[in-house]
Image (cartoon, rainbow, N blue to C red; front, side, top):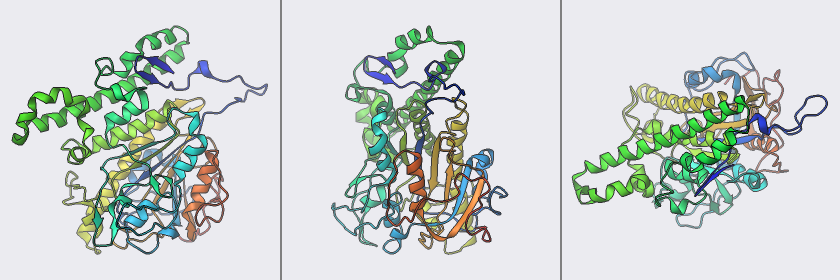
Length: 463
């Protein structure tokens, strides 16, 4: 740790920290394995998702094309299904149970019952004591309240994928600044104090200088790269907050608040409702959050994270994309209209671009003899395949990373129809040293993840 007044930062792995080696030269201790789940609302264009070919001989689909640079680091998984989400409303049931594999209880009130603990929290409860934060839950949209009268479910179900107990969702942070503080500040309550308003790096600078004197040149370079990365995220968050503040100043209805703005810039995201209406760059907001996950993993501040690109039934307007005009949820109900299907595909491609951004960054970070991505499992997926049909069969799923050397990526694996999604989850939990004997409808671990010659159990179907 680097420590300072009101701040504490975990360090990345340095050569100076390397464990003693055995006579054969094998490290006694390996880098930890990390796990993240990135959830995309409203499904995918089913005509443009599936790769062609199976095993290593596959070609990326139009939607998956952004992953070309990291193709060798991903597994595209076909024919997995979440049986517990069949029936009921097409969105809320499939969102809340995305990481539990259970069937949620229909309710219009606050008596939430998801039916299980999500896999991220199973891992956090087992290994979370090894890191400052057991887990990190992030998102973009604030919690939605009220009842969706079309289906009779409370909207709270659509705002959460992380569940600490069957009745308790784990709140996600949508404010990049607060998420940053949670990762790196030891006393978030003093954020507005003059000392706490300083950069985290300023607060630990003396400790960093002392450390630099005691490590080799390679470690000094790595330390400098790490500190530069933290500083870059800080600067981007500050710019984001100031840009929102500038928008706020231009609102005639808010003129009376101008005198208070300077004091509020550093904490402007306090109001989630304001955050949901931000006029700053949506892509930048998402990438800030993904960068925070990467920093959290790189510094071993946490080994478990979830991220929601949006809540269920998200109407996020994607008109900022060329060729798209309208909200995500509306477009996902394409009714096989060619124009809407094309817009749907473009929105899907944008999501994969953000995923690729995160993976490429993790791949560029060296850790021991490999990379941060090598020592991670980053799941991207949705709770339904076709947003028009609300179908939980053959879910769109990509798993990136090598899980600490226990996964052989660079393949398209097609399993037997209706293979339980929870089989994948059990396999991931084993790699997180948090195994379970049973998880919802699981029948065992998902085969072939570590076998480079394995193509799946339904290789005649490349979809």
